[in-house]
Image (cartoon, rainbow, N blue to C red; front, side):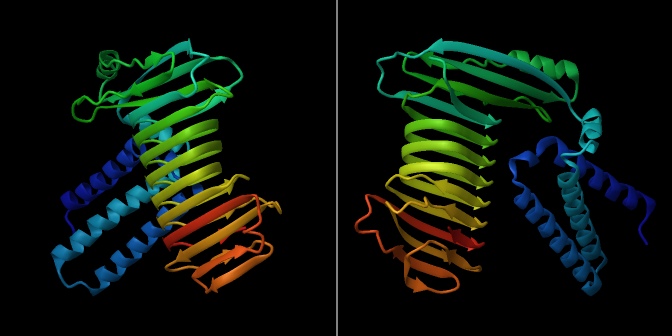
Length: 354
């Protein structure tokens, strides 16, 4: 029988993991289907722990299984309540926060053929969008966390948040200095750019989502480790979209595109331009909508290691058709003025092109 001290220790472990899950994990970076997958995975792990506990004959092994179950249960509970009012109650008990917003305005050289935008974030979301004005605006929203309000305010005042602005581009790199134990700094960037210009877009974040809206780019390199990538009409000559933990979705038109994620789905609407798309994910499904236009021809090669692959396009000629692998082309590929080539692979997930 467990002692009172052991029970108290287990309860504190559960409570600590639960608070940390709400405070420091950006659950909002995960799409609803990914959040559901995480809950299901947590349930499977708990079932495995239950079976191992029935099989075990070692007291030490029993306690190890019990601690693992507590940690997984606390993390799953944190995921479930992260968007509810309960999370605000935990914020009151957790680290103090201080916020500050910085705004910068300017204008580009009207004769510049291409404008550069470089954002290098550590913890924070990036939103890049266009508007009808000829000027640009950069809004930096910084949030510091510490175990006292005074320390959080000191941290946010001690860092320098200043983008590099020039007539031909914008560059911003979030601070990287160590802030001390249990302290952190998050910086969200919102960028409004003149519509109708051509950009070289380079956006990266370690922990944060990336959103791009109505951008025409010569090159678009979007990279995040923990966060989703969302596109609202991105047109690019060359597009590199990559995330380790998160989904990639939206509308994309590119001459050459490489799209990859390790844990997350890919859901894209492709535009009516000639392009070559290479898509891959390890844990997640791939769904693609191609133009319903007789002037567009498609060549498709898709393979999944575990699930079904379906191509639902009129006049598609299958060269290879199996449950987990499909290859072929539309019958107008050779004569169509617009040609789209798709190569899609996933390890754990389905693929559908329609």
